[in-house]
Structure formats: C-alpha cells, structure tokens
Amino acid sequence: MNDDLTEIKTFAKKCLDGDITGHDYFHVNRVAQLATRLYVADHAIPNKHAIFIIQIAAYLHDTIDEKVTDNISQRLTQIHNLKTIQALSSHDCENIFDTIQNMSFSKNIKHQHHLSVEGQYVQDADRIEALGAIGIARAFAYGGKHDNPIYDPRIPVMELTSHDQYRTKRETTINHFYEKLFTLEDLMNTSSGKKLAHQRTKFMRNFVNEFLAEWNLKD
Ligand code: ADP
Ligand code: NI
Image 1 (cartoon, rainbow, N blue to C red):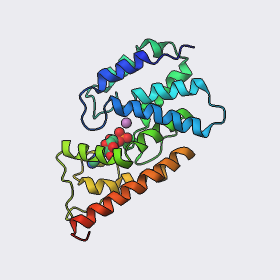
Image 2 (cartoon, rainbow, N blue to C red):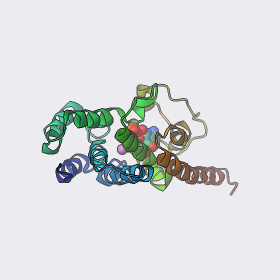
Image 3 (cartoon, rainbow, N blue to C red):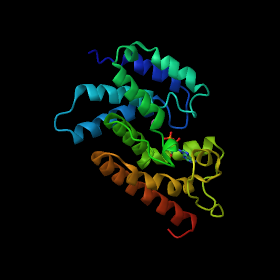
Image 4 (cartoon, helix red, strand yellow):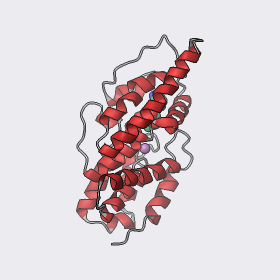
C-alpha cells in the first residue's frame, strides 16, 4: 500500500487557494494533523491504514463544501478520478466519500449521520478548528465576508432548526458563539476530541465574557 498524500494535497491546495474565511489549505492541513493526533492518542496500537484514510478525508473535506465551490458534483468526479483514490478498495473509497459528504455541522443539525471511526476523528478535528483562538479568528473572518455585524444586542440568539435556516438567517458573529460554537463540545465523537474541545471552549467563553464586559463598559 502506497501512503503517498502528494496528489491529494496538490488537489486540495488548488481547490482551496484564495479562500479567506478559514477554509484554506492551512485549515485542512491542520485538520489532517489534528485528526491523526486525536486518533493516535485514543489507540494504543494505531492502524497506519486508518491514519492514511483519515488524512485523505481531512485534506479533501472542504473541497466539496458549498462555501468553497459552486460545482460540487464536478468536484466529486475530480476526486473519484484521482489516482490515489482509484488505488483504494471500494470499502475505503465509500468510507472517504461518506465522511466528506456527511461530516459538516450543517448536515447534522436535524439528525446526526453515523460516521465511520476514521470519519469521526476528521469531524472532531474539523469542529475543534471552529473553537479556541483559531475558531474565534475564523468566526469573525466568516462574519465579515458575509456582511454580518460583530454584535448587536437587539438581534436575539436563535435555535438552529435546519441546514437552510442555518445558512440564510441573519446573525451577529457573537450570536454564532451561542447558536453553534458553544454547543460543539457536547457533539464530539471521540474521547481525545472531547478533551481538547473542552479546553478550547473554555478559552472562547473567556473571550466572549471579556468582549461583553468591554461592550457594557464593565471591565
Ligand atoms: P460546516 O462546514 O461543518 O457546516 P460551518 O460552515 O458552519 O461548518 O463552519 C465553518 C467555519 O465557519 C467555522 O469556523 C464556523 O464557526 C464559521 N461560521 C459558519 N457560520 C458562521 C457565522 N454565521 N458567523 C461566524 N462564523 C461562522
Ligand atoms: Ni473544515
């Protein structure tokens, strides 16, 4: 088995080049490394092939995101045609496609799609990227690109009900912390993922508390 990720990385780089909302190549590269770190921490004898699958899925996961491309089916075909993908068993292939097509937060608002073990690590790593200092930076970059206000106390925090409502509702970036980001730690699949998510959520809560204290001139 050839564990070369060169072709996958080059493809991801080409697809994600130019994104300024935190879905760039640096993000998928961190997801690949983080997912591997979490998997290794949870497994006394890590399986090298599982790590290969985790890394392929991690590098590819945002190349088919509606935020990054407006031609998802063309992207899926391009992925199918990669030599690295063609060389995999059909079981591994299905695992990777199932993971990248179903792992997103928005696809799991109504009901949780059951992912493979490898997929669960990629999903946890991707969710952890929405937390901590990096998560804060990504949230404000995303909010800025979508013309969302930083904060407006007149806009209420809402409950997320569906993929479409999540994508189209008007919200402030501070509300996004309550509507999504603070809920992520309870959605983690894996034990090492839960631990890191908890740590990063704590940091983010401190940030929002400090933000609101400054906003209200109470600091
Ligand atoms: P997924 O791709 O898993 O469905 P999202 O697109 O919701 O996840 O999130 C990707 C990144 O964009 C995360 O860091 C997330 O916090 C950020 N993001 C998504 N929606 C908003 C928003 N309305 N305001 C601020 N950040 C957002
Ligand atoms: Ni991602």
